Length: 633
Image (cartoon, rainbow, N blue to C red; front, side, top):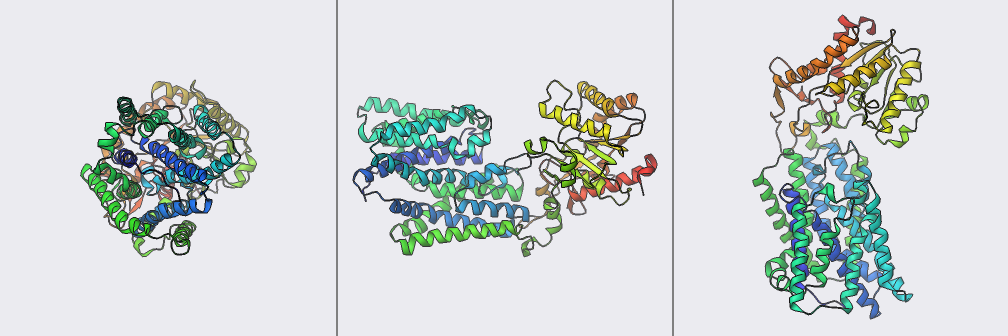
């Protein structure tokens, strides 16, 4: 096999790139643009892989089989250790919904499609990135998807005697241009067609570097300073929102190109990037990258979103320690062997088996009957029970056919029976989560309950309302005006800090839907306790937290803020009713997001859990005895 000249400075640049990413993940407020380290990695990968393949093709020594053997032998050993370790640790520490999510990403990681799965999961109700221990493998997915097709492209172009540089340039532009026109940052971040241009830049650099090198030291030094500046400065000033989609990420890409292609003999490359420390960190950069994020993520999962600086520093040191062990005791020993039968095929098989285990874990709902889940199973069911978000049932879809149900992936449409509704919930997801409180409340008459739409009740009227908001308002108002059995309108999901303009819009909306035959019941906003609900629950390695309680002052503030709404609506609509659901959170001393050991929220957006919705239904029934007894059995 032909090989290219080993360059210490490229390993040093790897060290810099991984350091930027790791520091960004640990301390995002310190290095807001540290994620650009991944983009530097992409350029390095494109450069090295093209340099190797191109030289082998020219010497007629390139084979696809040998290329993929080297990729498997290089990537799989450390990856297997990390995937297996994460899965085993998760067995003892993760709640069923978390373990189910881990299983899905484990399966995706084994076939290098993590980036695609993560993109498909993006949405309003997607869990925080910090709670996904294998999130960082999205970048490995991009690289391996590139490696899957690029050798074939390069081989084809060379054998057909086509202009390789020109053809790769066309592919680069075809991948880059969509970044300038897409309005979806997640698409630009995760999907390969929006990212491959970064690797193509590395590939083009390899072709240029093969024939052309700058040997003037002064010029080398100037370009190396510029290259490193184009990497370091963006790491401190870029933010994720300003980069994707767009052209700005090309700045650190250019920095990597200058550092790799035109600075080989510079002082920075020969004295700093080629120093023993930088080279060693470059050699262990891959296992450091693999280990660091699972450690950080598990810390967030177990301890909540607040992780101390000392803890984070210890996690980073631990990731380096584990990387050193992986490098010396896994990677180096296995490098001695080159055998399809005894190395490559077993590595591939083990990875696929791990992926299969992940898929089974996902299909089995995170093995909720694990012995480690004793004592927390009931609480976790409130987080993973029947899902109401994104819900659409057949009764609702058939009766209220609307393009919105297909256009909006989080559209909500639930109707208890295929008949005219007796009660409609009007509002956003904070109205939708009340559906169980009314549809399955045994204290109420057998009401046919409808919950449809996803917008604040005032959306559709203001100047800032979108077309979707206006279409939703028109749909719901038409339902209210035409359904013959409708007796009750429940309005929920209102602002907990309304201003005068908001109140005017609310008055206008109620004017549009009020009727002498229909009772309107306005729900006060429910209490929002900021502490992540999962961190309030006991779990393996962690006792139940007492930090999830707040004083009654918080409730008083919420009620006082809403008093202006009550007085305005009562003045305009004397028969309107108000219900306060916040009794479920508070006793005479304090308020809490946990009751009887069960969570009252089901997610980080503080939607009510099924248990909380049931409690609201019970309290509503008690309240109804004095206010609307006709709704009761």
